[in-house]
Image (cartoon, rainbow, N blue to C red; front, side, top):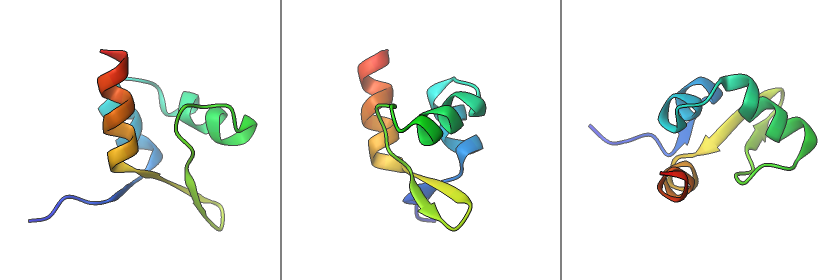
Amino acid sequence: MTEKLLLTTAEAARLLGMQPQTLRKWAIYENGPVVPKRHGRLLRWNRNEILRFAGEIK
């Protein structure tokens, strides 16, 4: 089984140990350390960027 390259907001938040609302605020205000990809109204987060950021905060 391969790992997904794009994560939902809930999946990305779980990996970071944060609330999904924090990531949504990053997307809305465009001020977060990771920028999501937008697919219509959906947000998708690059798994590698999330993991890279997770390594920086631990």
